[in-house]
Image (tube, rainbow, N blue to C red):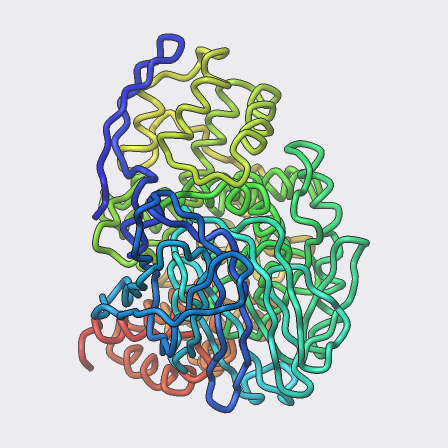
Length: 619
């Protein structure tokens, strides 16, 4: 169960009662990491595409925190545990030990209880995954870009690593790892570790020397090729996607240098990207050394590369300084969203960063209007709740707004000095909101009296966004508002709209602010003039299709079907399903489309859509 704590912080006159989860226990893990911890993981796994299964063994090197411990508890979900052996040190004399799997919890999976001999500090667990493993997706050749080879990839965040490795699946525990992976001919394996770009004839070795939490454990395999972008950056992708991806993301090295200049050295060796098939349910996943990236951000004009800035920024905020429990997700995502905007400003322009911040603020406002007030706090109550079901823009955008406000309050130079030190002081350490407040009080607020204890408490503990927040603004959008107003009043013809130099962000803002009852005639005017239904930019098409659903614009229906069937990124597909489910005809169309789309969706996307369909009124 989750432990509640109240502490009082006295630092330079700052009295700050803090209430929240401590790092001594994780409500989303069965493991007792206060008794025994995994120090190192070694995997030896075969990838069986015909059975959609990983099988082999996991070796765990353990650190005992209490001498008398005789049981180790690990997290698992739908794993077939075949044998457990124990050994001491480098002794190869493995001894079979007893184990039992507890009944499965709907959220947490099954606790694996292992009898631990008195002197054992190594375990070997022989096991196989389920074809339905929540953290793995197996794709047929037809579901890939190249259509020639199957593909498999993982998504371990938040608590899905346990579905493909028996381990302590909590961000409180960090471990190094090595791995041997065995693949069929023509299938290249990669991991969030040191990768060798050369093909290894079906046998691949990996080493991750920096300790990581379990949710950053990552694996993928398919028909992959590599292209370098700089000495320490490159792209893995299917051959059909590789040239476009490498061209789209070749600013990655510039982004790395921009962060390093401000916030300290990159501490993970290489930084490569893996472009996944379109079914990947997220925009990106910040696996150290190898970020997983959706192909939906390959727009041809680098207009969506803020996603790369975001995943790269996680190398400091999240991967280096990590939330100890999922209720404190804002410590990962709020910091990263703030850093993302700083990177975009440095590499592209402050104008673009401002526009993206305004769009993020509007997204936050819209989402908060649909959430329970308690879930608009930076630290929500996740007791008994699946962390995947509670992910929202609150952690990202409200967290970023808090840091933006602090920067404005104390000045950028002072804030940057503190932030650089924050990453250095807390590197490879689990972080809680309480520890964050202790750090900032000692290293920033003690020297700057512009921030009060009541303001800090309001950000973290209270719903919504404080009235004193430093909200983002963009002059560019005022021009869009003016043009939109003239067009709606018909004082400006459709062909006179000043779209020639509009960025993706400006198009999205324009479309999202149009009336939902625009009417099919005016929709057709826009479509004829700007070919929005046929746009290849997934963000613009997303906004256009939302408008098309609201206006029953039949001419976009085929594009809507193709869009929902061809991609699985939840940010893009879920709002479209939600919009369709608002009407009887839309519900019928949503169910029809989902039947076609389901085989290509990740299990996380399938669960989300199926919950929406089940909750919708019958036709």
